[in-house]
Image (tube, rainbow, N blue to C red; front, top):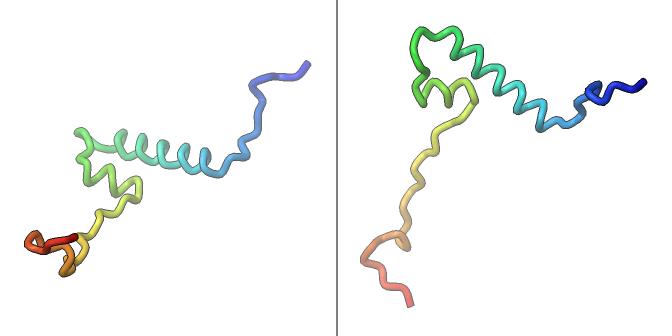
Length: 65
């Protein structure tokens, strides 16, 4: 009889998500307090967006037609 729950995982994206979730659970378990957003981002490998440089077209006094 085949076991309907015996499924091999072949989805790379899903495996990546499982790894990220596991890493987050381990970090939370090791911490003696709730993780800050910065700590969560570090565990998940999220990098903050750097502000982009403003151009002449970004100036509020520039009139566009």
